[in-house]
Amino acid sequence: AQSVSQHNHHVILSEAASLELGCNYSYGGTVNLFWYVQYPGQHLQLLLKYFSGDPLVKGIKGFEAEFIKSKFSFNLRKPSVQWSDTAEYFCAVNEGSTLGRLYFGRGTQLTVWP
Amino acid sequence: DAGITQSPRYKITETGRQVTLMCHQTWSHSYMFWYRQDLGHGLRLIYYSAAADITDKGEVPDGYVVSRSKTENFPLTLESATRSQTSVYFCASLTSGKNIQYFGAGTRLSVL
Image (tube, rainbow over all chains, first blue to last red):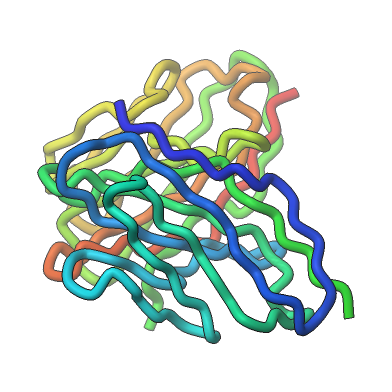
């Protein structure tokens, strides 16, 4: 079964600091990659996705992620975080051969202090 | 634009009781999913459905039953609730053309 690892469980930053959240997966074949965000009390929302092409993908709210196939990684970045970015972030992987089925990491709680 | 709705949003029940969580989507998406979210585990897939009358197990199906008689509905039933099933349950649907899942607001279930 697919395994998705998010190494940072809780990250605390001050506003304007840069962010990088790690995500590694185990599947060796074709993958589709996602980052979802869950703001307090809300449902999951898609931040960005990678299916193919340019390994650097840009999402909403200034987030971006880089797919590095050789490292089985899909790290999320933002150059300057805001208080409103406080949320839980989930990395998810879909094996290319199985439409839709997602494997999630355990999540990273980001707290941004104003 | 209703999207995907879950009901109830909050539920408290007792061990041994049967509970059904509802999920309804207005997009006519073929695929629907049920996840549970637990601290330290992220989201784990319980069951999914590729179309009406087609369902399949996910990672943690034990103790749960699903049905999909209509494309728009995907209820999840806990036949005899246990404390370990206390969790937040999310329903999602998939637009196959884009392979993107959209999530409902969740149901917080407490089993006492």
